[in-house]
Length: 204
Image (cartoon, rainbow, N blue to C red):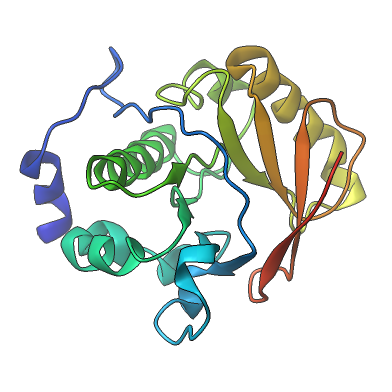
């Protein structure tokens, strides 16, 4: 029951709905990005490396289940994204909202401990637009991925992306994956799918 007790371990400034708030963070360039699954064996310069969570959920459930251990590990890195817990449209809405809460709980904890945190934004369908951006910073840096987004789903991705732009008005978007015809100040980060290393590529 350790993961359930997280809710009672520490309290953060939260939205009216109870989602912990992620504070805005100024962007600083990162030389290399790796997935959480590479962290323990990583031998590079951690202070110049960022950590992302565009992986299968089972590979990073541990950062929520063992927050003290993983906070100590990740604080050595130059930046971390918030965990990308899945919010698939066929998930029950309470599960989607729980995953959004967990993402924010972990991110707020890391900020409290002094880590450089960039929030990962995500959505499921149009109905999620009412709550999926709650707790995210405005006019700040955000991150997201279009890894595996086929042409069939490109319009759906753009719908959510444009809503994110409308609600959050981000200063900088870190987009892991492939270039798309999107508006905003975008830094594309080449990403090797759900298993490869990443590096900052170029700006839009």
